[in-house]
Image (cartoon, rainbow, N blue to C red):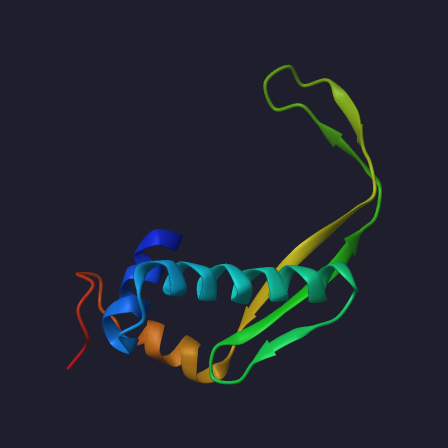
Length: 100
């Protein structure tokens, strides 16, 4: 699902216009980005938690050449799904429909 599809779904479910629903999705995503940039944890009850973790510098290997390389320290965004979200995803069988 793309950002445009999310905006269309929001438009259908709320009756907002296309511009307003696109703006609402953008505001929502920007607020998550800003909070993470400030080092905050974003917790959406029933969905999950976004947080920033620091990855220490380390040695790695280029899989194509086998050459050893140094990987710099960096911050990465991590998503930890909430319990109810995990359970709902696990309830879906391999065909993509709900399990009975």
